Amino acid sequence: MAKIIEKAGHKAIRHNDVLAEGATDVVVCETAMKNNAILVAVDNDMKRLTRRFKPENDRFKKLSVIHLGCNAVMASKRMEQALSLVAHEFDVSCRKASSRVWMEINNHHFTTFR
Image (cartoon, rainbow, N blue to C red):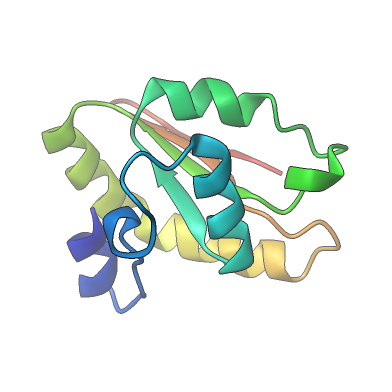
């Protein structure tokens, strides 16, 4: 996934490059927020965890997440197709008081939550 993001001219931070193996999902989320990064999640555990992070929860109100709900081959293709939408949503979120990107990318649809 990182290669697709980098190929489009964006910076990608790989989990294994900045966090110890076995870092908790909470640490992963906090690291993404501290780096003003969009967390790209491909596992259902992260999806369940991030759904609990409501905007009114001060701790994670600025967490940006894209959840990929498809297999690895399709996820790469769908992410490549969605990058312009992701960039647009990021730009919109930067102009809002509660700046965050919240998206789900699946086999047959992209969903963005504002």
